[in-house]
Length: 312
Ligand SMILES: [Zn+2]
Image 1 (cartoon, protein in one colour):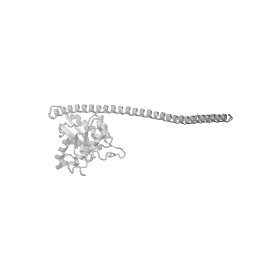
Image 2 (cartoon, protein in one colour):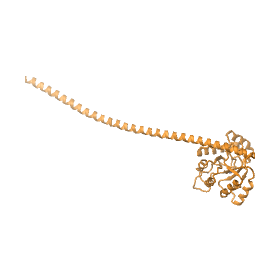
Image 3 (cartoon, helix red, strand yellow):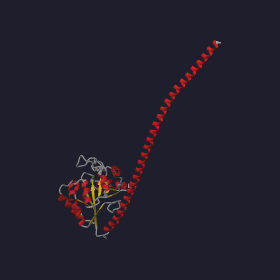
């Protein structure tokens, strides 16, 4: 009987111990799982924060993108408006030019043109033209414009935008102007230079040029002239030489001499006048040149492709 009781007690103790072990194991496991659960939860929270940040970033990028699209549309619209205004203006100039050419106007026309820039001095030319409220034409080149001709520390490459934004006609004088270094070797070498300058001007100002002046004048192209003109026409270009000048292409130093050359060259109802915006003598004479022409009843205008002075 006593043995039976002892066996039962041992059995109870065993059951009790087993239950304790199970409970302990459950508690320990539960604690580990809870710990893991907390870690996963924390990780999830971190991921949620990260997701929110990324969503905010995407929203910010989308907002910026929308803003840029709006600005871009505004600029495109603005450029179209400017193009429309310019076209209307040129149509009116064409009417005036036809009247002058047929002797039906009391006015005459002078196109001031500046070649070989931009240079550091171009800013001063622009200021003088602003002062007299005159629009002109700039036949620009591209080579070496990262450093200005007479100011080694300043870049000239920003002046293209200044010329364009003031409303002057931006025209193409080839990229290299290398008359003695291959420009006129063939129609291809010439046209490549025109395209290179066209691309530079487009990059700097957004404008597409449509008037070319041959460096040295069209006669410099000699036997290649006709082929070049035909290739220019294919690209939508007209070209123009000049009818008057002050001789500043040879870097003239004497103002009296330049003045005499200039006044002696003015004798037609429509003049295309050649200057260079690197020349200080021309810069110093410019106010007198403007006054002289206006007193002689010339209206000073920017060149445009439809002008009769531009060969198409
Ligand atoms: Zn030139």
